[in-house]
Length: 213
Image (cartoon, rainbow, N blue to C red; front, top):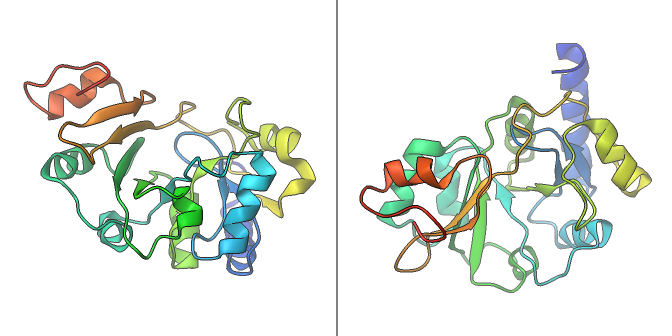
């Protein structure tokens, strides 16, 4: 992690203040840099779509502090999801679950589902806990451009469009999270990222890896 502990802590505290006031920040995670807004401030979430140039029907994933927070944003957690949570969270797994009414349609892109992840990174977790709400967890890039792994890469894409870039050094993972939809009869890999299909298949015994697991 780049910089002194006190310096990082100051950035985190400033970031929390910005988030609580409806601003946008970029922050390091265990995968790539994220673009954050408080999920319960509609105007801030709308700003994320504008800054990224992201279509409004593409839902924004949420980062949570720990497993207990999943019940805040999802109405149910299937048994297969619980197995994946135990194996891969915190970490580079994003689960798509049926969303709770507490999650704004602006966040979910009008969908009945919500994507959630618990990052394995102290800066991201400190931000979420300090905010006291789920944090928008989309990558800090312009839509269609490479996901940034450093603060400098964030700056080159988003620059003055956001209020703060927390420089935590290069992200250790460097690959986006794997997204698994568990809302249907069978789990489906929406995006294979840091966690491979083979790794997922080891947890969900007897189901072949591939597009459906």
